Length: 253
Image 1 (tube, rainbow, N blue to C red):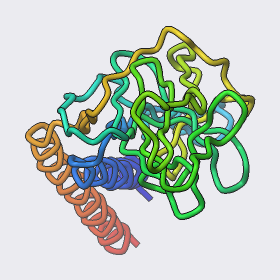
Image 2 (cartoon, rainbow, N blue to C red):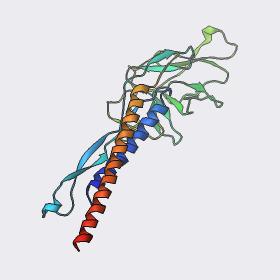
Image 3 (cartoon, rainbow, N blue to C red):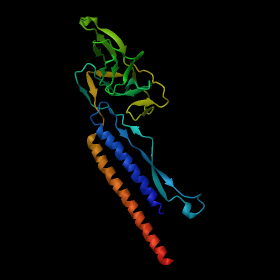
Image 4 (cartoon, one colour):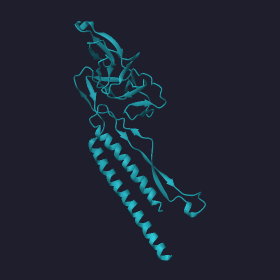
């Protein structure tokens, strides 16, 4: 069997995988705080046998996925006027608690208070403060300061009766130390909670948009589709070559 088949097969497979990544990015072009996912691939030499004969030498390469990454370029910040909307300015993440009780990180600052009085994200992850998930007194008017301080005024109380409840935990771990989960949240590579960073600043009553460039994503989808077509054409050529070789062998016999 022609080794070209293996080369084209891996190329077509990775083109499909990259197309899926770009399609997911394009689907999240309007998702608050979304970070575009990057698909990385590398060429790996391919050889058969132990290298003792000419036919065992490396003559082709195939494609393998490399460690995927994320584009950490900040998205555009827009003012919403909602007192529970926050946008991280520059580097940094909001700490949240996932359903399994572990800590994860997000840039999505469209927060709200759920029916249990917990400050949560749009995906209902509890926002973490200095002492764990942040709870808000029922019926209180909640505001968030530029340093992440969560304050509340009880129903019927005068404006001067505002009380600080907690402070949102922000983290800013070194670049490359976070891994992206299938849920879109980021986690530390070792699974341990990152240290809080008091220098992270936020814009209040604002949200950060997705950093996906829809035009670039559409161009990438077209390029991936053409790449896949080229690889399938190579597969067809390899199959035709094999059939022609088999016919020659039949004639010679």
